[in-house]
Image 1 (cartoon, rainbow, N blue to C red):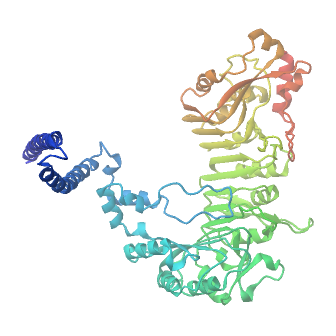
Image 2: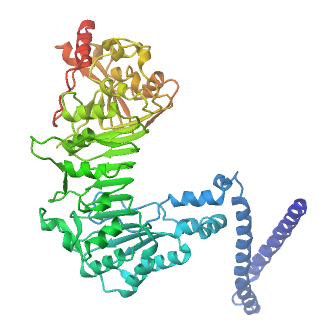
Length: 611
């Protein structure tokens, strides 16, 4: 059968090619003989005008034939590899794509506009196969975006109505943007009330100052009173530019600034009844009060304040401990708020056991808040992903780093990201990089597989005196450790905007990954005395040799040198050999590295061998 189909296509192609040649020649002949003032001009022109209309029909037929051929081609895995996947898998992939078309908060000046294509609309236009998958997947039409300012007259409302029609009664993710103005729009309200029982995720993006608009209050009352307990399981509140608590009129906290409170004219029982079944909460600038039942039984908790403003939202150490304690099944915890503490004489809260914790992310410049969380939190034995933003150089004398070391010692961390947040350099407007001591941290992480370090200084300014002494760790030699004791489980290392002293880094065996090493926008440094500088010439860069040098220390790994990573030389002063191995102080809090065996021995080693 397929032979007949191929023969038919080949015959049709030959006939079409012949007909097109004849057709083109006929058109060209008319052009050659056409004289505007000739006797036959009117007849020829009439014939050509009629043919122009038919030519568009021919073109449309040709496009239809091409579309049929493209549909065949796009189903072939050799041309479109994703086509080999079942439709249900492809639709699942689309679910993870960008589906929100609301603009980012206008108060977040640093946020870039959304540039990725928005699904499912974009997938509809790719090919026939994808279009059929998208139309058949009701879940892809479940994300509803509404801007209360434009109401039922805007493009978003038309889009939302179309999505609801195609969603076929699946549960809804509702994202509402609220500004200072909200019209009295009963059509919009009726639409939202009709889908409220289906809402499983409720996202409020509030860009207005102070209290809600009267119409917004009415809308929120209608929605909260129509939520179905057990259906709503996720809340996302974002308020810019001013943070505040979201409470009812009869539960306004007495000990807080009225400017930090937004009220909803609901009874407390109705408000709490709608929030208490929720298992995922992501809050940035708008928070139910800390005693709310919304914080009970959570799986995911995100407490952040990404906006710099004159008002600070804080939580006491005891309040946070109580929230964590009533969510023993917590898996994801992100935090960047300020923590206030009781008097110095009061004892810290009892440790909180979180046996199911899988991800912890501590960001912002409140190091005492991170310190408190690291002190009170005791994860279980599940693999843990950890991300922190540190504001001070590593030192075991630092309370913050002491708690960090204690936390990682009792956790099974498999993925770790450390972002340095030093104070800002007034000249460059860039943050200073922070010093980290790998030998004090990474031997405590035997299960670590993925590591990312950003804006960190690794190693100290010290001339290479060991030559190609790669078989043994420099720190192992100085600490009298056995190289074989280091657990070589690290698979992936990414260094971003780091300052790397290569003499030390090449001997940090605990930082040498098995699979992938990425140096992203880093500066790698080799040090030399002025005597050696003049001996070997005025060369200031070794970037061209960096890839080869990295492959030598990680021989089995894939090495990527990207985004302008460079290799440079630094001159060392010969007046004080011991000082060549000390790190320059960084102008931020607690920026002097703690005295350690590493620092002392490096200085001694450098002076003994006299660079």
